[in-house]
Image (tube, rainbow over all chains, first blue to last red; front, side, top):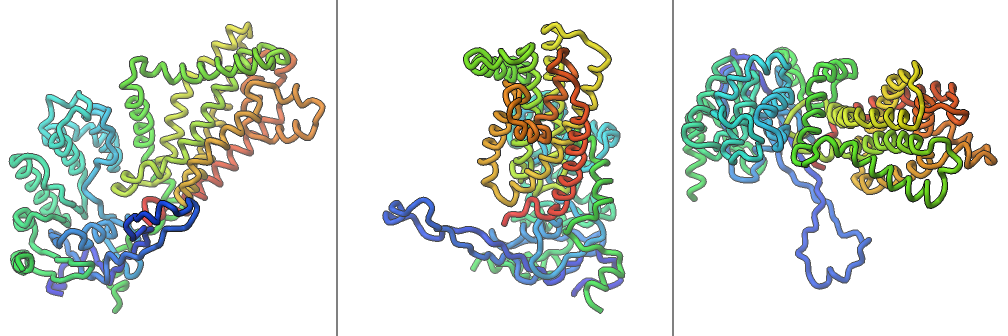
Length: 251
Length: 285
């Protein structure tokens, strides 16, 4: 491994395999299918090997970009690190429970932004007092002060995304995983959110960033892991790996 | 040196897997604000877009009671065998509504929140607990209607009415246990969501909502004996005995013991049953 050994490891991913069993109807529907009886078994299980033995170690203050084409296993790897997807073989060790940056699923769009700040904060594990203390900061960061009383369903998608990001980053995370979150909002908000990510990293945190935007990876990450079809292709300095990746994409 | 040793040397823990029961329950207690707010905000969101808002929580079961009262009480004449039929029916329908909504909606509390389960880490038991809390908060106004119905029916309030509080607490505990069981079962077998409404209906027609089990089956002691141990029937009988006067509504003291046993037993079984599959929730296979 390229990283010096005197740094403290925070996350160790050791030969991780993830396999899904899914029901698949594999075939295209044809005229013959319509004659099939309803109770007849037509589902077959198919095993999808999403990760095929990925290993790497993340150290303190690392900010690691995860790149690869669609369906390469990036999100599966991140979900395995968080513990949401069980590994079939291998193991993942972490110094504290890693968290995914994302709070969207906890919010209720019929409620006002204000209520959602409270609900989202509680879902992230903040206490009522912590939310009260950070409420103004969250609202200011989202830039939605004027609309915070309105139900979230009236927000545009950009406004919703800004509110979600503001709530999600209100909690301090030791190990934070950001999946494509920086692609939201206008240019001004993107700059602000990227600097917020760097801030988290500088506060002794470890950040994983999954993105298709090489620019935002180059701006925030010191190290890049490249995954393709469930295999780890390359792990190293950001510029080096991105260059190799971009070259492979042009072919 | 293996990777596991290396990880242990730096104080790293394995990710995933289920926490021991003690720390799990401590974590649940720490999340109590989340559970309560989720329940409260969901009610708010549910009612926000209706013109009558919160009133529907009460109107729906009242209208239900109206329909059953008309069909069974008036047309099929079950009211003849019951003293003060209207409060009897309203108490039955309101209390049953609390049970059946926990039973059927509790079953979906994990499967209908997959996105939430997959994106944030919190003890999953928070979801069924929030659901029962939501139904309990909605039961509040229904309990008021029960009391009003008893008053209008000419039953004088007395100190015994305070027993409603422990009764509702026991009933809520019973519903927690039950929804924990159905929530986990539904994760394994989705088809249950189709089946549970029928089970709820079965209990509706057999627990004595609009007829009196004791009067109708007075000649069949086997049936009344079964009803003695049927928890829903126990809760309804206790609710009516608390609020209504008259020889039909003598307090069945032994029911307090049975109902307490059901509630505590089911709450413990439900918690263990739900917790033992903690790492399973949210998985896609």
